[in-house]
Image (cartoon, rainbow, N blue to C red):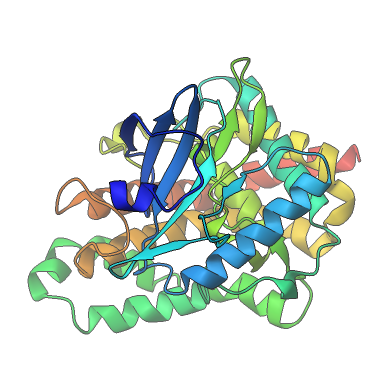
Length: 349
């Protein structure tokens, strides 16, 4: 790693290296050089197979945010002025460290307000940014019909023992084929517009200061075109639940309807005018869909030998899938309750 470190323009000699294990995709390290800290990451090229385009996106995104006099990641270029260092087939990048704290789940309603406002301001800030300037770093990232079709294809190559073990999960996913098409069909009909979206605005990708005020969104790897519905629902997926997606005791896992109300109200206060009627009418369904989609992704990775998400043990992704599929079912069974909450909020705008 010292060879990589020497390629970047850090201030002074690096005297401490600490691994950060929070992320599910890239390998992340916190470096200390004197009184300063930096982030060094090895990009997961199985997930991001074009690191150059990835960093070009992040360069455009962070410049746009900085030009608005707002805080974002600050890229540290290498000594040749490039955004990346390549070594032995691996790609490395560096950012200035932002003093902050992160949360994996929320037990404080004031944090819900901050998360919602942070995401809404991000969407508002990029409302006039042409999304076609950004590379599509992961094609079909939230294209649920494609994710569903890949799952069906994977089942053809999945062992019989895995199929028997996961028969209830498989049958539930297969029963949702038509639901997986709803949002995508609305995009194809241009009733739901494509916009610049974060595409992974989970709670752990929001930095907070010491007073629990949101600083900014991080993990900008998946910022590209998408639907705002995926972003709103994905933030809700990790903010409005009793436990994180890592919880294996499903008795402890449930959806927090009061947090949902706080989140939606806080988000719409900032960005209501940028959502059309079709987006608003599909918001509750998109929450069910995002839990289903994430459950499919975890289950698919389990069947595929855990190549996408980092795991601590062989069945880690299966347990994550069980967590997400349970919540998807809970949303399905409480759609009318959630829709009533949303309708009451919209009525006041």
